[in-house]
Image (cartoon, rainbow, N blue to C red; front, side, top):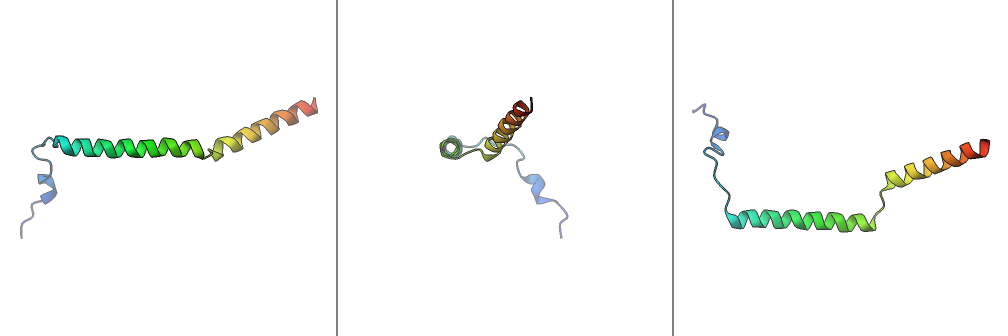
Length: 66
């Protein structure tokens, strides 16, 4: 049995990816980014909303004590 690690052969020597494969990957990344941006338009960032409410309540409470 050989004790040579086959994973050391991966990427040696480095080979440039074909242009059509690069384009396919970049199109996928652009699609995911678009979906992420569109979904952020229709969803709330609940953490920032909650912290904003707490800050507003804290400010109102401190004004009422004065």
